[in-house]
Amino acid sequence: MKTLEFLLKNYKNFNARATRDATLAYWRHVEAGGKMFWAVAGAMSSAQLGITLAPAIRAGLIHGMSVTGANLEESLFRLVAHHSYKDFPDYRYFRKSDDTRILEDRMRRVTDTSIPEDEAFRVVEKIVVPMWKKAGETKTRKFWHEYFYDLVQAVDPKSYEGDPEECWLLAAARARLPIVVPGYEDSTFGNIFASHVKLGECEASIAKSGIEYMADFYDRYKELAEGAGVGFFQIGGGIAGDFPICVVPSIKYDLEEEAKPWAYFCQISDSTTSYGSYSGATPNEKITWDKLTEDTPMFVIESDATIVAPLILSALLECKADPAAANEAIKAAGF
Image: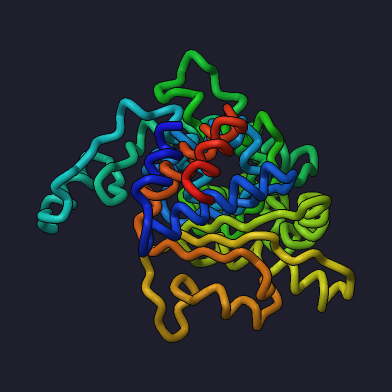
């Protein structure tokens, strides 16, 4: 109970309090039989969120995801090319010439780390392009994440550089976790796929569209919402969060069918609230769009998700491992 007790003892006010309360509400929801859907924007896979995200998937704390195409592929990159990544802790003091040298070294910087082009992009490309070509030959159509589910499980374990226990994509693939990848065209492999389509080597139709993702997600949402309902845990803003949370009003108004509201909402974002800022909009605004209700437990944590999310997941993993001890600690702390 080390992390949980740390949160209970130290996190009293401001963003710390929101972190504690969001964690406790998350635990109570899943303990009561509810499910949780995660929306992950940014470059969290490059930041190695998989260290805690993968165990959380295996522990049954995460039941569905919406991720950017970048997060999907970068989880795989960390698995096959981890040793070839380079870190740049002094990136804030770089000049343009410093980043030009990183480019010339065939590295692609993501804040303070960098993805190796040859060991990551090109290695994966050799495996996935034949998959795409075969899909065209057999007239097979799949969702974008399904190709990556096949891809991550096709990689020879002997070639792993990263810890497979810390690869959330591998954990999700093995669990057949329902995933949506809205806007996957905006990713390295989305671009690579487009280039092969342009060259006439692959057929664009083998990858199901975002519209098809939403049409399928209607059913996935209904399945997840059965029983105690499904909550929404969001990192960052943009399409990874906005796309899936819209499923509730779309079922109600567009399909004209009954839909349970989201049973929980938490967003970790360092975007401050501003006019027209989706990332910084308060949860109350979502009530007006019929995405949440006034009774939905809502939490906003204005902080760095690379700091907050691992703390929350670590505490939840402790709760899952020993529910009785966790509940006793929570009760003793007065919650």
